[in-house]
Image (cartoon, rainbow, N blue to C red):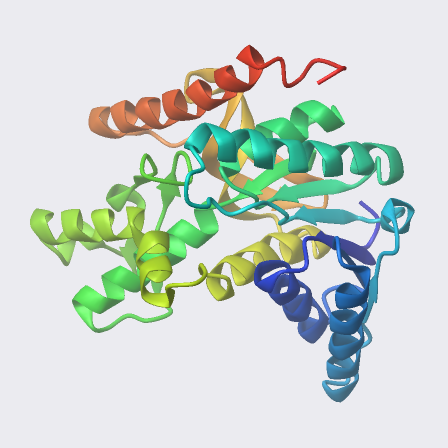
Length: 319
């Protein structure tokens, strides 16, 4: 990637707008484009953010896309668009509805921004990352899903709640799918370099692992009318900035596995070195037998949903 200049955010709800705002405030790129169904709403938010960037003495200009052609030249495209689950809607209904949305935008990206890197945030995340990769036909390093950074941040917070010290020094690691089958890894989690297994007992760590798995649901229950977006947006911005600045940092991301951890042809969250080329290298860690078992269960859960899409002939040309 040339030095990053343009990032497109597809989806202008709380999540997408917050990602755009963080990038504008950080001056991470020269141009941010908001692509949403309501062009006037996107224009209003873009104008507000551009004025905020001027207040912050940043050079970033935020604009609204009037059509798919306005995403042309994007270095990175972030897909946040998707429908929430509503009463009476089955999980299969949600899967196919959001898969159709991601497919539509993936086709736009393939046509108008064929050299871009794609970051998927729409749920169910691992399956939507699979859809984006298959539809664009991009190499796996250019289609990543954001989840592991967020899940690790939640785990780090819950560790701090338990310890009541070490804020900002906690490094947590989470693998697997984004959801109930995620695999938090206490073995690779430290506080200022000290393994948490030296600081907390097995029962306490078990409580933290369970809270991490339920981290998103807890916020949904507390809000009552929405879901988290500050932490997810910051986690997404971290990925974008790692690519734009070619930092070569390692973060857990959803990526198409190619003989990684014993799997190929399916998406799951694993440690990935992120740079200007996207997910430049999958990092392989030695997992304990129980962690291997849990990772296998997580991969199988994603495979089941992907198989459902194939049963529905979702990837056929006429679908």
